[in-house]
Each structure stands twice: as C-alpha cells, then as structure tokens.
Amino acid sequence: MNQEPIKKEKILEELIEFKEKDLKFSDGRILGSMCTSANSLAKKVFYDFLDSNLGDPGLFEGTQSLEEEVINDIGSLLSLEKPYGNIVTGGTEANLMAIRAARNLAREEKNIGNIAADEYIVPELIVPKSAHFSFEKAADVLSLKLVEADLDENYQVDIGSVKDNINDNTIAIVGIAGTTELGVIDPIKDLSKIATRNNIYLHVDAAFGGFSIPFLKDLGYEIPKFDFSLDGVCSITVDPHKMGLAPIPSGCILFRDKKYLEIMAVEAPYLTTKEQSTLVGTRLGAPVAATWAVMQYMGREGYGENANECMINTHFLADSLSKEGFELTVEPKLNIVSFNHPKIPTDDLAKMLEKEGWMVSVSSYPKAIRIILMNHIKHNHMVEFLDTLDEIKANLDIK
Ligand code: 0PR
Image 1 (cartoon, rainbow, N blue to C red):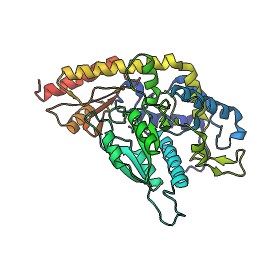
Image 2: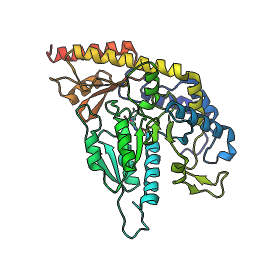
Image 3: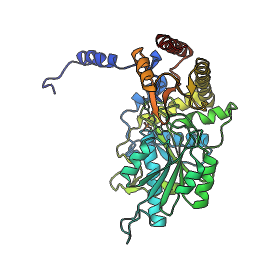
C-alpha cells in the first residue's frame, strides 16, 4: 500500500485502465450471463443509499420500509398477499436461507439433524439433477446429504424419481422455475402435491424465472403454475439482479409464513432489532432501494415488454439455428437457447466462437452451447452471431 495519499484524478485515471479490460454488456458479446446492465435509475439510487445498513434497521427506517414494500410487491407477483423475507446478495444466499429454514424446522418438529438428540439423523435434501450448484454449497454448510433426482426426457425433474428418494430423513424438496443451464421449468404443481402429502418443505428456485414467468403469463404465454398459488410451496428464490434489471447484488427470498424466518432467528441483543434471521449481519441497503426504484420504474408492463423482447430474440435464434443444421437440446420455454452441431464437438465450437469474440458458455448436462438472451442481446447481435456460425461451418467444409 502507498505511504503517501494519491490524488483523486490519478486514481480515477488508473481505474479506467482496469475497467477497459472488462467486457461490456452493451457490446452484445456476453452470451452466457444471467446478469445484464442494470437499469440506469436503479444505479443512481444504489449510489444514493450506499451508507444505509439493514443489519441495524432501526437506524435506517426509511430503507427498512423500502424493503417491506419490495418484499410485498414481489410477493404479489408470486401470488402471496403477505410474504415474509429479505433482499439478499443473490440466488445463492436466498437458497441457503430457504434450506436453513427447512433444516431448522425439521430439527424442531421431526428431530432430524438434531445434535442434542440421542441418535443423530443426517438430514437429506432432494434437488433435481439440474439444480444450481448453490444447493451443493447449502448442503455442505448445513451438513445435509444432497440427493439428486433424475430428469425426464424434457430435462424436467422426474416426479417418480423424487418420490423414490423421499424417506423419513428428507427435510426438503427443491423444484426449479428456470433451470440454470436450459431454462426448463419443473412440474412444481406435482412437487407441491408430493410435498403436502408427505409433510415436507418445498422450495422453488425461481432465481432466473421469477422476474419473467409472471409477466409472460400476463402476455398469454402458456406456463404452468409455479408459485405460492400452490399450497405446498413454502419459499421461493427470485433474483432482481437477473431478469429484474436491478444492480448486483440483489436476490430475494420469500417465505409463505413468518415461522420460517423465526426458526432461524438468532438474538442480536445490542442492535435496534433484537433478532436477526438473515445470514449476513451488516447488510447493504443500496440494493433494496435500487430494486424498489427499478420495480416502480418498469411496472408490470415494462417487465412484460422486457421478457417478451427476450423471448422474441430467443425464438429467432432457436429457429435460425434449426434451419442451419444445429440441434436444439429443448424447445426454449424461457430465454435460454441450448444447441449443438452434429458434426462439431461442442467444446471446439465454443473455442472457435470465443476466438471470434463471442463469450458463450457450455452446459454440463447435456453438454451444449448455452446462450442466455438477456436484454443486452439485440436482434443485430444474433444476426452477426449466426454469420460467425456460417463462417465456422464454411471453414470446416460443412454445408
Ligand atoms: N439459482 C439459479 C437457478 C441460478 O441460475 C443461479 C445463478 C443461482 C441460483 C445462484 O444465484 P447467484 O449467482 O446470484 O448467487 N445463475 C447464474 C449461473 O450460474 C449466475 C451467473 C450470472 C453466472 C452471470 C455467470 C454470469 O456471467 O449461470
């Protein structure tokens, strides 16, 4: 570290050099990211609330009220009149909070995972094979056995496999509304029935889909129920910093009942609130205010337009790829296109695309090129991308 202070201008100048090495969403070359450039009003608001700390909310009552309003607004999107929850750093923390609530509840109500019990029972968590790796972290942190349910031919969780994996030690089942790799929506209604029948906690990970499915439904897209309108759903993760256009870090965990927050509360005797259920202590108010602002600014209509435009680009890309001899893994339900070419190994294709400046990602199951059509990807970018694919095929002598 420097001994003498450095002038502001010099610091800012130096930072430009670093920033220039970063890719920009607006260039339309980042094809594998679920994040995008945040709404500009939200960025300004974020800065205005940088000093606010929701770890001690009595000091920042205005920001606390904003959090209550955001939670209520997201709850109403997901068919829950009185939701409980928090704005957190993202999907990982939201999923961890949900599974912690489920674990603590099972410990109290079923004596599973109770270190004070005569015999310690290892709690089990059932997730679809397609679940985001954040559940692996949750299982590790909470000392759970992670049980992967199989997928069916459409890459949705196989209900039979979930049923087969349930036993007396199961503390929660997870369903996904918008899988990370394919954007697939699990049959949450069936999971809800199973969870209710077996008295097991059901968490829905809608980190990606939560800020598009409700609006696409408004517009007439046929998407089955996935939210709190299904009785068995206890909690939902939805990330404003993905399709919600909020700045990073903004995730949201919603619970159906206050008891889920209470079961993880620890005492915080010297703070302005005497209990805390969130994982982090000192907690940024900035993402809360920024998420509040962008939600007001967009409204249902604005988010509808955003989700619809992403879907139009998705269908354009998917249809064009099919015509050009590429094979789609699934028909896209949300704004992710996953494809392969029968004659080009996927990793080779990804490398060739990257050499031409296209930052794609490769999914693991099944292995495929994965394109996420966030709103920084415009029609012209996709036309250029298809041109690059044409050139690659021509260079390899593929018709
Ligand atoms: N649940 C689902 C369904 C997700 O897709 C993700 C992340 C999470 C939970 C975890 O969310 P956080 O990353 O906010 O904690 N999905 C993206 C992914 O892993 C995250 C991402 C975003 C990765 C932008 C890369 C990137 O450039 O693909």
